[in-house]
Image (tube, rainbow, N blue to C red; front, side):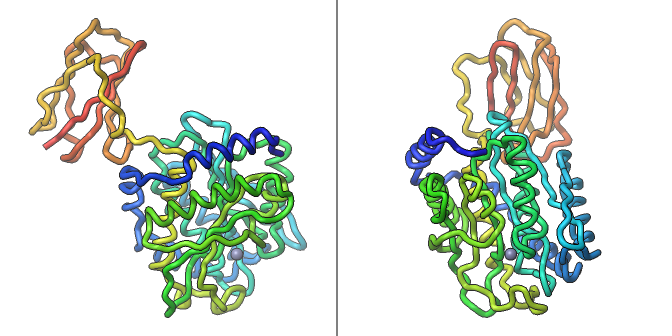
Length: 386
Ligand SMILES: [Zn+2]
């Protein structure tokens, strides 16, 4: 949607007030699960599809692979958006994760999956793989804002897929976009010291959205430095899928490798010529930034209520059996949810009795968070299974 000046100003002030991101141990615990071996495996799969130009079977195969990955993760809101360009038809892949507080406001993380002349393992297997890994780790984590993971096609033909999405989805649906975060060619160069990533801000026309982009890009740089071992430089955004959004007045940011490959758009844009270790670090920084942008909720940070609703005992439990005992009048309209330390729901029970025994033997040993809710109140307690 076109932003009003008021909205831009409000966002800018908000961004300034959160300028120095504080290190978040919960975000770090999520980022720690970024898997170098997953990334390597996905880059290899992407490369093996071959040259993925619009109209090729290779591109369709890559599309089917990406889609099946989201299905396997358990995402259900997966849309293929077909468009025809020149002699070929291909699809943008749009996957939506709904936010808990602002379901109708979107953080878009995007990258193109079409390639030209070669297999495009860096340009843009790197961004494609990064988004898949981030989507894997965010699947069971609550975020206040909705997230759209978008894999565009037709980028190499001239940003065709992203322009089509802006024209045919963003504008007709008046989509409320908080930020577009673009990943393109973030794989680094084999044999070079890849210790820095370029964070890209909007310095072009229209100017109304530039300061907000700058603030968001500063957040990106801060998060990359907090959650990866990379240094950052800030430069200007150009020639990738965020541009149709930027022309539309949206707020954009992006990442692009600082050591720039000479293999892009050639047959030698292959895994052997890039640096998957660098991509793993870029993925960690991107995930930290996305958690910050989409505002994730740390279940461990919930303060225990003063007014106790229930007792849970024995705690720690040595045999996986615990009892919940309500201290107030029992209502049948109640529920218990147990979360692990990553915020993933691992157990749920409704309509608890006044004294209710629970068999949690299927859960691993460790620390959990138990949240009991009734119509009126909720209480959160730490639960330890030994
Ligand atoms: Zn690219």
